[in-house]
Image (tube, rainbow, N blue to C red; front, side, top):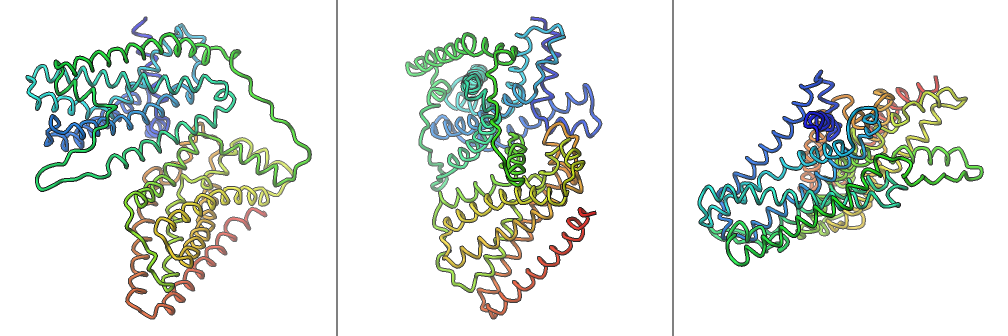
Amino acid sequence: MNKTQLKTLTTLNLLYVNPSYTLQSRKKGKRGKKLIQAIVSQYVLSGIIFLVVYGMTMVFMDFSKLPGYFTYYMGLFGVIGFSQSMSAIFNVFFESRDLKDYLPLPFRQGEVFFAKFIVVGMTIIPFLLPLLILFFLTAWRSGIVLPLAVLSALVLFLAFFLVLFGACSILIFKLTQTKSFLRHKKLFTTLMLVISTIVMFVGIMLMSHNQAVVGEKIVDRPVLHLFWPFYQLAHAPLSLAGLACLAGLLVLLGGLFLILKAVIVPKLYVQFGDEANQVPQKKRRVKGEQSFKRQLFNYNFQLIKNPNLIMQVATSSLLLPIVFLATMFSTGGFHLNQLGSEYFGVFFLGGLVFADLLLNPASLVSNLISLDRENFAFIKSLPLSLRTYLKNKFWFGCGIQMFLAGGLALIASLAFRLPLLLTGMYLIGTLWGTYLFSLYFFARDYRLLDLTWTNVSQLFTRGGGNFGLMLWMFVSLVIGGALIVLYAVGVYFKVNAWLLNGGVLLWLFIMAGAWLYINHISFWKRLEK
């Protein structure tokens, strides 16, 4: 295998592993070696941060006496590594679509795929680095001399990385080689990304639950038996149990290697290298006459079947509320079923703030016009009212946002055990707020219209970029939370609750009416011209 060509291919594939960061670096004027250095530096920095943050917590713990915490940390970083591997494999193998670019070049298929595997591995390692400290501290505190403790940590880290990498690769590529995946690529790739993210956050949340300290002594966690062999190898590698674990680990690694070599990799050459062997897409049946609105609905539905778009919407808008609500369910004990009806205005305002948190520049309705790309110019050339077209598009996006926001608001009401009146006001506030903020972000998309994007991540950084996105969410949370607290305190201290509610609601509806008028004049009215 030509080392120079392999290095070149590895460098090229680094550009695909994180498309959003690559795009941001290019916008800053970085090209060639500087761009690659920036990408590599990002992963090096991530590894250093993980080492420092988790290393500081690990160094004061005697893992030789805490097998539960040992397996807990292995499970934690295993979940993070699994999530990273799924994202990296999707971006490098499926999203890059660069195989045709290599065909006229003197690269062998083995070199092309091996380089991709190297890049995927490089993105996983930084998030597993704290395990080096874990393995070393366990071996050292177990009485193993320093040089052997270092060697043991390196060997165990490499073994865990290979097991995780091999298992993830087999799982993902075996799925992608099925006929169902080839027929429904977008659906499956979206599910892969969303599931990996949910697994990571839910896994971390569940494993972080039920920590206990009695006096000065840490109470150990229950042992995760899946990772027990690694503890045995770090704690007592030369014991009978340790040798048995070593033999089992070697057999597992050998089995994973054979499956990859004999079953997975040969099919990759067919799957990515020979388009003739791809399962043909089913031709969509043309139905009879459809209404104009139905045709637009089907068209817009096809536009949003973009894995990166759905993933970004899920992570930036839905993930934080879902994790928060899951925490409420898991901890319990935080109920609001004793609140009186005088708090109805507080929960209406709470619904508005909740809608504000769910809608941001990365939301679905915030990018729906730009998803048209070159189709938008074609649609404008038709004898069709642009306002009518965009009205249908707006209600399509706003309807989805209302469905998501309303569903989460209803779940939140159940989690907090709200009385029926407060639940209704919270839902009304959420839906009304979703409509108002959808109007703003839809008009913003038209104002910042981008029809030449190559990766959907480019749309999310328009305007203020990632900083603007985080600032919007932070300001919404702080200001919205402060207003709700002040409002609730006023009602609690009986500051003429009904008069207070009436005044606040009147002020909110005046502000909403003013915004609707401004939006109509500055956006919808202009479309008629």
